[in-house]
Length: 471
Image (tube, rainbow, N blue to C red):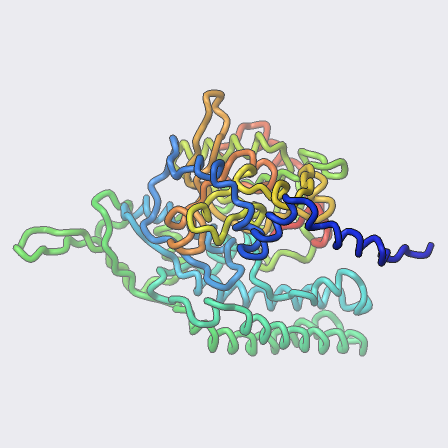
C-alpha cells in the first residue's frame, strides 16, 4: 500500500492561520523565549510541594553527584548501602568510592559481553540479539543487583582512597575507547568461530584480550587499591572490633572522639566487617501493567547481566500498591529504599524555584500547547513513552489519613545544588504513573509476596522488549 504524503496546501493553511488564535500567540512568545519547561511550569500548583515529610530518615551529610555519567544506579545503590555503614560505625557521614566500583563494573562488562559474543557466534551479524549486543556494549546504565554483585565480589572502599577522575566525571570518551576495542575483539572471536575454533579456544583468546581493557581502565580511572589502612572517626555506639578502636586525645588532655584503625584490610574485608551486605535479603518489585504483562510473574533479561557468576537480575511484576507498601514499611523502619522512575517526565530541571518537584499538576504542557498528551501507563510502556531511566533512593514519605502515600522524599545523585539541597519531592500520583521499580529488604514484605518471589520461575525476555524499558 502506498504511503500518503504530507499535503502542501493544508500545511500552508495551518501556518497562515496559526496566529489568528490569541492562545497560540501567547504560547509561541513564551516558549520561544523561555523554552518548553519554563513556559509551562504551573507555579500556583508547584509551590504546594515542600520538603516536609511525616516519615523522614536521617541521611548522610554528603550529597553525591554522578556528573556527566549514567551511573545513577551505582550511586543510588551505594547511597542505600551506606545507611548500613552509618549505623554500624555510628557516624553522621560516609561516602563510598564510586570510581572503585565503576572500575570493576567496566571490567566485568568487558568479560561478560565477550562471553555473550562467544555464545552467539553462530548467528549472523544482523541477528537482532547480536546487533543489540554490539550497539551499546559498555554504556553506563545498570541495576541495584548489578552494583551489589560488584560490591559482594570486589568489595568497596571509602571515597578518599579512589576519588573520581576526569574519565568518570564524563564517561563518554572512556566508553567510546572501550567500545571500539570490544567490537574489534568481538570481530576476532567471531572470525575464529567461522574458522572452526572450539569454545575453549575462544575463551582462551578472550583471556588474552582482557588485560588490554584492564590497562585502559587503569589509565582512565587509576589502579584500585588491593589492600588499605582504614583510619576513621567512629561513634561510641560503633559495632566493631573494640580492639581496633582507640580514643582520640583532645588538646586539653581529655578524651575526644574514637578512632577506628584497621590496617592492611582488603576491600572485601571492608564490606564484610562494616557493610555486611547480604544480597539474598533484597527483593525487586516492578509495576509494568498491560495486557501482555501479567502481574505475579518474575522476569529476567537474557544477555543483560554484567557479572558472570553473580546473582541474576530478577524482578517481580506486581500492582503499584505492593510497591508503595513495601517502600513505606522500609522507611518506617528507618531504611532507605532503592527506586527507579522516568525522571524526565514533567521534570522542571532548569526552573530556579521548582527543579526538585515532580508532580502531574506542576507543569501544564497540555495548556501551553493546546494538545492532549494523556496516556495510560500501560500505553506508555507499549509505545516506549515511559521507561525506568533513572535510579534514586526513597528517604521519606508523607502519608494521608488513609495511610496511603501523598508524596515521597527522594535522594538524588545530581549534587546538592539541584532540587531541595539534592533531594526531590515526588507527588504520589506522579510516581504511580511514571515510577515502577522498588527494591527493599525481605522483612518489609508480606508473606504472600515473598512466596511469589521464592517460588515463581524466572522468565527470560529480550532486553529490547518494551516491557523492560529500564536501565
